[in-house]
Image (cartoon, rainbow, N blue to C red; front, side, top):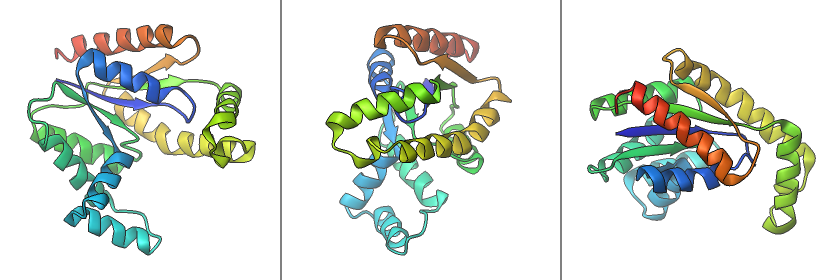
Length: 196
């Protein structure tokens, strides 16, 4: 079983590469945004709990998010693995994810981060903003803030998995297929080390 955490700043091409990884390795995509929309949209107990926190302007506690993750993992008992997108964002979430996977007799195979320099990201997002219709894709101050938040939130998680020897940075500049080849090589290398 291959379990990947895919990291990358906004505009790094994470979404495009995630779809290619899902197809190649037959992984189930777990996006925290999708989980929240599903649980709240279907008015599940966890969805109602999340809504209550959001309604008060509070962050949804990790226990609720992990509960949603557990539901998704358990809904796919025959999965070849999972790709975690937008999670974990903190050390506490990484520890909770590790505990959940350990319960299921598996673990994180690799955390792969797409490295793209800030100026390239800003250009990509502004270009995307010309067609996306998203105001936050056109405002450079907002874009720089999103990049800063990403770096502050994710660098501790990257380091957490680096101590386990499973964090890997990939050059995120180049053609889509070229970047995918780099990603695939890293995943294959990490999977062989993990004896997946």
